[in-house]
Each structure stands twice: as C-alpha cells, then as structure tokens.
Image (tube, rainbow, N blue to C red; front, top):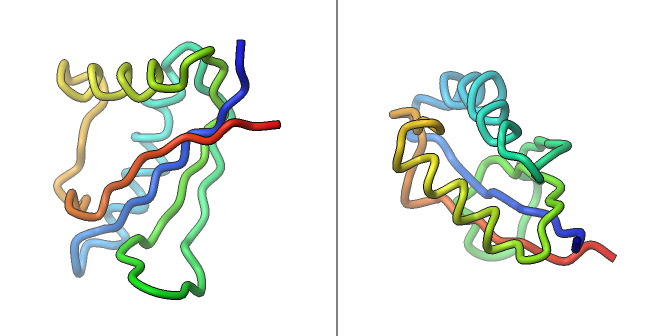
Length: 103
C-alpha cells in the first residue's frame, strides 16, 4: 500500500474558536481515526503565512491506502451517514482537504 498524508485545513466561526478547538481535538479526530487505514493525527495552529489564509488549524493524518481518494471518500461517506459529525462552530467555507504522497 502507498503511504500518504491527509491534510485538513479548518477554521472556526468568529467567536467560537474555543468550542471548535475542543470539539475538533476531543471528538472529530477520534471519529476520523476510527477509519481503518487512517492513523497518527497531528494538530497545529496555523502560524505566519503569506497571502490569503482563512485557516486557523491544520491537522495531518497518516494514510495507508493505495489510492488516497479512498480515504477522502470514506470520510465523506461517514459525514453523510452521521458516523462523523460536524460541529456548528466549524466555518464550512474554510474547510480544505488534500493529500500528498509520503516518501
């Protein structure tokens, strides 16, 4: 299987940063890590940046999938069926997911 990293860039709605951070680290990460082939979450606050940067937080997950699109598809399916919840504090216009191959 290929080794890839999933990167999730997110932000909270104004005034809901603490609520968002608690939900993301205490609930959301556990729900994502429950997917077979996704492991080792690393969370960081976004620091200095150049250009447009709507994100406040970055999460990186190790993927053990031949095709990393399968991981994103499984996350989307679990959101749709309620196995992964989305908290009202998340700013949905500032969500971005992408993968990259790990050497």
